[in-house]
Image (cartoon, rainbow, N blue to C red):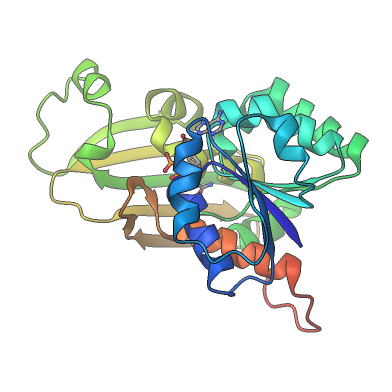
Length: 270
Ligand SMILES: NC(=O)c1ccc[n+]([C@@H]2O[C@H](COP(=O)([O-])OP(=O)(O)OC[C@H]3O[C@@H](n4cnc5c(N)ncnc54)[C@H](O)[C@@H]3O)[C@@H](O)[C@H]2O)c1
């Protein structure tokens, strides 16, 4: 499968590494970043069997003829590129899921996928349990709660100051409320909230805790469905290049691409 990657940061680098090591049976054909030098930097360590096009704009990127594009850039990148890519009939793995909480953009993406007969894949990312949440949804989900615990450095100092937490020296609950409010105040949490909301059809109730001693990004998820109650706790090591991104997130993308590229008779999990 011919793969193009938008965003040569923490997630993009793990995907390229998996292709380079032969873990993924895929051919990297194009890279795009607002800073093309970042792509060049990643390519220096990349063992390429073919030419990889480094692009500044979408038109050039599409000339690489990817069959699957991984968006690992930003919400703006989703707005600017994803509907156009889907219109061309190219499938997309979308990481900046928070963008889909904007109803207008969500509809635009769904329509473009339909028009282009293309698919949008949203990986489970930095959490777990999306399989069970999807299975429970038809019988009804009453409540979804997300508790996130991160080092205080993961949060915008100005936002913390406005909320009255200028100095956080021990475990402190810095937010409790609706997911829609949480994502505006704390964009670093936006993807997990959005993935849970899309899978369950419910906006999660969110609690966020900060502590200068935390060395992991921890997410606790509680889901109350009609026939099951689910509690999931994920303790993630942050990616060394971007402490806001859990290492599990790119691993989840690698797993998804493996599923898409290696058909096997045995399918585990939903
Ligand atoms: N779904 C999940 O579970 C999950 C988990 C972690 C991160 N994310 C999201 O995935 C995305 C990538 O994460 P990351 O940790 O690799 O980030 P990063 O900051 O390490 O890398 C992002 C790269 O994208 C580039 N970029 C930004 N906007 C762009 C644009 N409009 N066009 C082209 N390039 C652009 C940047 O220059 C940077 O090189 C972010 O939006 C992040 O919020 C999702």
